[in-house]
Image (cartoon, rainbow, N blue to C red):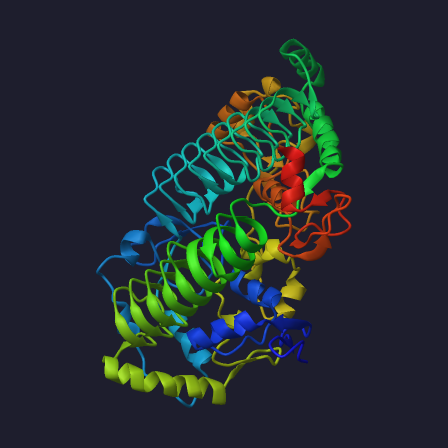
Length: 573
C-alpha cells in the first residue's frame, strides 16, 4: 500500500507485520545499489545481533598452536579457532581455501561450506594487559569480565565501559572511578546505583544529575551539594540523615533504591537521552545530525537504524559501526568502512559484500577471514577484470536461485545472512538480551541453541546467607561457591552460582557495599532492563500549554512526566 506518492508500506517477509520505507530510505538504497529490504527494521536488527556473542566465554585450545585460551567459541562449535598470534601469523593462508563459484547451487550454501573450513579469531580483543576474561575490549589493564569496553583499569563485570578505573557492575559509562552499579554515567567518582549522571561525586541512587556532590535519591539536579530526594540539607544534617539510612547495609540501600525509583517516576524526564543533536530521532544519541531510529551512538550523521554507532556517516542498519565508517549497510562489528554491505566483523575494508571476519581488504564478495587482499570471491583471487565480470553474474544467480531456509523464507541478493549461517547460538548472543526466546522459539525461527555446559561445582553458600554488610564479610568468602538468588528462575541466562575474586572483594570494601546475591549475568540483565527499549512511541510534551510532539522511547503507560527538549531545559536549568 502506498502511504503517499513517496512512502511505501510493505509486509515483513519474516514477522508478516507492516513496515514503512521512506523516500530517504529509497534514495539511500539507490545510492549504494541495493534493493529495498523485505524484512522490517525490528527483524533485521535481531538477524544482525545474533552474530554478536559479546559476553559468553569458554575455555578451549587454539586449534593451531594448542595453547589454552578463553574464547567466544565453544569447544563444541564446528569451527577451527585460532589465538590472536596464530590467526594473524604466517603459518596459514586464507586464500588457500578459495573455491570456484558454483552456479548450480545457492550462494549461501557455498558460503556456509567456506565458513566451516576457514579458521576464526578466538575473541575480539586488542592490546590488553592481564585481562584474559574480556571480549570486544582494547587497551584494558587488570580487568575481568568486561565487554565491549576500552581503555579501562582495575575494573570488573561491566559492559560498554570506557576510560574508567576501579569500576564494577557498570553499563555504558565513561571516565568514571570507584563507581558501582552505574548506568550511562560520565566523569563520576564514588557514585553508586545511579543513572545518567555527569561530573558527580559521592552520589547515590540518583538520576540525571550534573556536577553534584553528596546527594542521595535525587533527580534532575545541577550544581547541588547535600541533597536527599531533591531536598537541601546542611552538611551536618545531611551526614546525620545518611547515617540513619544505613546505606552500607543491604536493607538500608534497598529501601533507598525503592523510594528513589518511585521518586524518579514522579518527576519530569526529557523525551530522549542525548545532547548536542540536530534532527535526530532515537535514544542515547549524542553529538549527531540527521539520523533516525539510532541508539547508543555518538557523532553519527545521515544514518538510520544504527545501534552503537560512533564517528560514522551515511550508514544504515548496523550494530557496532565505528571509526569513520561510511556508505555501508547491514553490517555488524564494523570499523572504518566504505561501501561495505551485508558483512560481519569487517575492519578497514571498502567495496566488500557478504564478508565474514575480513580485514584491510577491498573488492571482496562472499569471503571469510581474508586479510590484506583484493578482488576475491569465495576466497579465490581474481584479476580486477575477472572480478568485475563475474560479480554481476553471481548477483543475478542469487536472485534466480535463492537460498530457502527451513521456514520457507527466501534469501536473495540484498538480504543479510540467513540465521543458519550465524556463528553462534541464539542464547550466546546479544539477541537474547534484546528479544529473549526459549529453545523452542529460537529453533522455530531458524536459530541454533546451545545447551549450557555441565557445571562441576557444589554450592557452598546460599544467597540468603551472604552477609548484608561488607564489614561482616570475611576473606573466607573467596573460597565459597555462592548460589544465585534467582536460582535459574529468571530465564535470562542465570549462571546459577558464582564466586567472588580477590580484586572484587577489595572493591566492595572500598565502596562500602555488600557482596551481591545475584550472579553476573542476572546483574547485567537488571541493568540492561533499566535502559529504555529500542522502540519509539509518538507522543506530545506533557507540560501544560506545550504542543510539541516527538518520537520517544518512553512508553505511554510509563509513570514519567515526559517533556520536550525546550520545556525540560527550562525546568531543570
